[in-house]
Length: 135
Ligand code: ZN
Image (tube, rainbow, N blue to C red; front, side, top):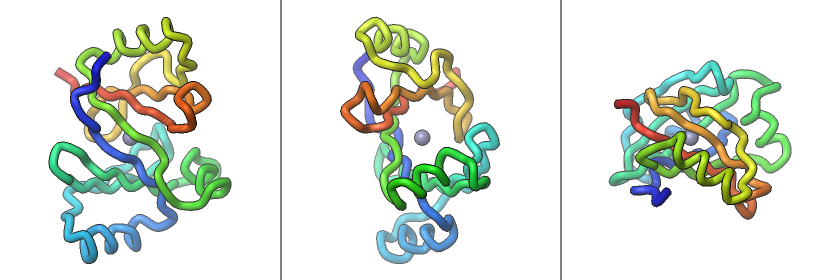
């Protein structure tokens, strides 16, 4: 599937506003967007670093996947997202190579991207997201 670049790195945080401060005041990046993705029960904040973005994720529900992740492992890197040309084809290829898919069909992610996750059991422990820009 040959990803073009790392689209973003997803980081689970307890408090979006407090975390934004670190990225702005210490790293000197600018948060250019805050967006809620109801589907995934998260509020996200985005920063650009070259071609790659940092996506901070705060859970909007105590039952959400990010809340559960923080409960188990604390704050920190949650997933790595690769930009691919053709997401359905990439998913098919991954499955044909024995990778366990979390999403068999692309779904809607933040920033209007079409996204799908590969299971960390099949990816040596890294929750891996593939994403494609809509046409
Ligand atoms: Zn993501």
